[in-house]
Image: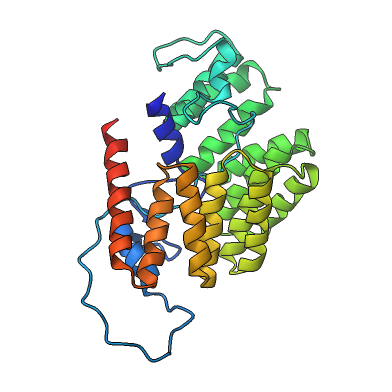
Length: 316
């Protein structure tokens, strides 16, 4: 169970989804050390004011995974009601938690779908896609298989094919809120924030209680530099909760940070950590803010904790 929890927490999308190195919008690849240093080097709202002599340069920060937003993808099934280490609902379709392997032989579309979800959670996207292909072949009306296959393509970075699956699903069911929300994620990653926001708008119109659609639209607004709208959406996502609330606090904290409101940013990152002590992104994001305000000791402490969590994840 713990291994699955780590896989879920460290899986990547949307945007928010995590690899040893991640390309920046300009195409170059930067480590967390470089990312933290670059974020910390951005001018603060007090730039230009007289300052005291600068303190000694801090030692190099540990290299850990790049900062990423938390996985934005929406599950096609209800969020687990149990603890975070519960298996995804899809894996329970065959009558209880099951540890699948590629040597197992599912007997019908439901089991191919269930095993596909299992592989997708473990970031084995090619195996997941093959199982969703088979589920769709056996049952062309299996809408969740289209949804999960699209999600797997997006997590793999194949946004075009992910969008194609969501297009098919929306054509069959124009009122499928989650299909719009997930297609918006793909557009978000492609850098088309206008289409992403349009899809998130539609998802919210269909299902005003879909908290993650507000979160994802907030991320798109943040990409556009519209931090006030972003914060309003994160507020709504937090209010709707309760699933994934730690991610919403983390993302709102980043909007406050980029707006220059460092006190609120620290408060939100701290709340995200309280809700999910293993959320690496919140520690690294909080470290950026501590560096910006000159608290090198707290910044280093957070980065040390993030590196420790990283090592623990690798050793499980």
